[in-house]
Length: 45
Image (cartoon, rainbow, N blue to C red; front, side, top):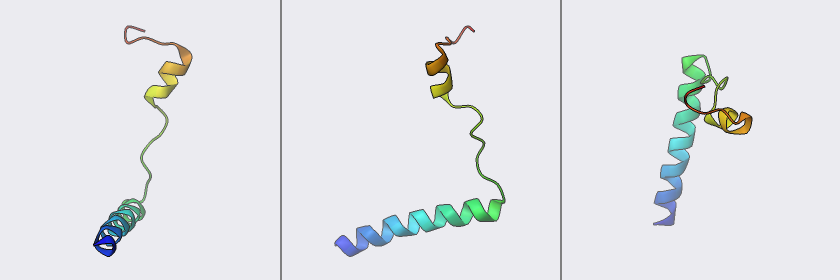
């Protein structure tokens, strides 16, 4: 049973890497909610 779980996790990881490579770009990380938290911004700003 442990092998099945490990195989599923590995499949998901490798599939994600494959999709990133074939899409030709990584998701934009210019903005993260953490930036607003660190700078003390609120939703109204």
